[in-house]
Amino acid sequence: MENLRLHFTNRPSPDRPLSTGVHRIVREAAGTIGVGDALQGALLAQICVDRRGLWLQVANGMRGVHINGRPVKRMAVLRPGDSVYVEGVELLLQSSHLPATEVREADAGQGDPRVVLRGVGGKYHGRSIPLGQPCVVGRGRDATLRVDDPAFAERHARLELRGERVLLRDLGSAEGTRVNGVPVRDALLVAGDQVVFDAQHRFVLEVPWLPSASVGEPMDADEPPVSDAPVAERPPQGRSVGRWPWLLLAALLLAAALSALLLFGAG
Image (cartoon, rainbow, N blue to C red):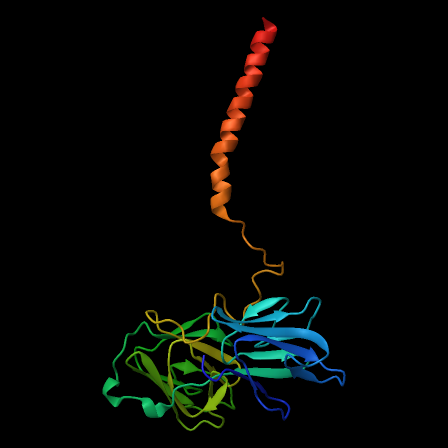
């Protein structure tokens, strides 16, 4: 993932680049929340980045950590655009996106209707919005994706297929749209991009035949962890299976010996 970084939304702090490795989130002696390997203080959580994916691990006994407003007890997978809340501080996970200038007008109207926006937060959570036809986002009655909020624009944005990508065009909204955590007016979306309208309506672009652009997501980032129990390694299967014939043979020999003992002892 290009230009992956943490952005502090409610305090004037520089963005923190997220390279491969472990990034500790700590409460410093002064009470402020900081991110860095060299910082001293109480460990609250840590963000792990490697070739397998991107996820958040919460320190033992720590409470009050949220992703997109939902509590996390131990671990959760992250994707660009997620908001991580730690003791009142919001850390917005940002990454780069394709500018709309890279769009090819020759691809207008072309694409597969299986391309969808899958809701991962807000009113449309769990629903899929097909993009086979142009989709208007707004408060108006003619909007394909309606947001019933008086402060939301009647025509907020328009999405339409451009081959295997989706062109997002602003239609005059007040605050624009966030793509992978970055405010935009226009953007070219690719598989795995997270799009947020009005701060709470979250969607992920899904293109069935393409891999996700995100680092990896075996589960939804805004869902609770699968388990609070420590993750244990599964024992090797091959060695256990190899023992079974020998154990069965030993059991048969033991049964034969006992039978012979009883038979000859009775005689």
